[in-house]
Image 1 (spheres, rainbow, N blue to C red):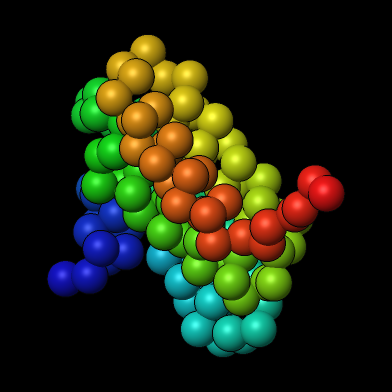
Image 2: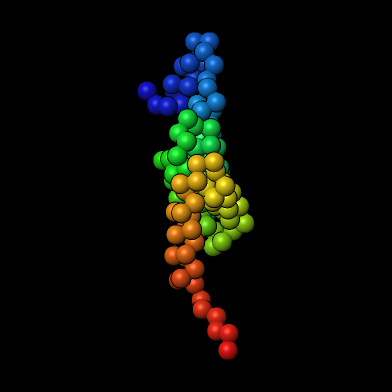
Length: 128
C-alpha cells in the first residue's frame, strides 16, 4: 500500500492522521506538481519548507538531522533551478539561520565552513 493509501485508510477507520502524516501528504502533492512542470520552482520550494518543518518538529535534536539536510539540499536545488529566486533564498536563509542560532550549536561550525567555501569561490575585489 502506498503512503497516501495508509493515511486515507487510517482516516477511513476513524483514526486521525498525525501532523507528520499531513506534512508528508503535502510533500507528496508537491512532488506530483513538481513532476508536472519541471520549470515551476514553487513546488520544489514547498517541499523544502515541508522538510524544514518536519526537521524542526522532530525529536532529533541534532541540527544536521537527515530531514534538515534534505531541506538544505532542496533549497540548493531550488536556487539552482530558479537562478537565485527569492523563494528559494528565503528557504535556505531560514534553514541556515536556524542552524546558526539553534540551542545545539554543533551546526554553527559547519555553517561557517559552508560560508567560507562559498566565498572563496566568489569574485575577488581588489582594494587598490
